[in-house]
Figure 1 (cartoon, rainbow, N blue to C red):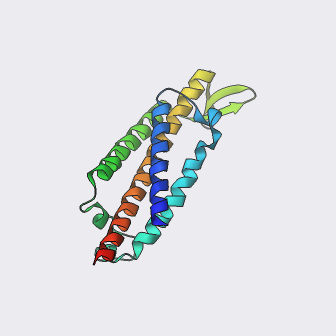
Figure 2: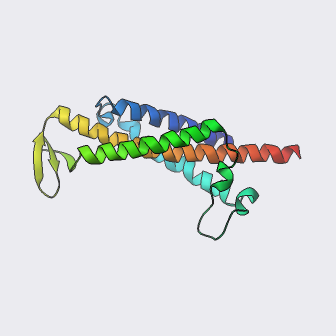
Length: 171
């Protein structure tokens, strides 16, 4: 089961990275591929079990100071460089995605009465389809950056759990 979730995490991370890259081209994925929101569901499918499997692992329990969650310290200790690089890049991409989305989008994007608008409590301005798609792509950049973080942490946890199980079988 852990191996299947590990592979699912890798697939989710890869697709989230593709979404992140595509967002640079101003493509509104919700128009072209509406099922892209399944990546959001996928985060819960892999991240919740990762935490569940990790919380009772003896190597993790050594680092526990309280009952308020798990420590990621044992997972990072001697972790594969490739996975650490994935996590680092995911954090950088998430920060960039969030910053670029919040700078360019000062309101909510809506489609009202056949017009695209940028709106807070009242209409800020009417925008073109191109502007709407560009701003929506910024939203995708932000979401995909967060997905990358959750998928990469899941990859780390499952990789280490699988590795530790193999070590236990050898002894």
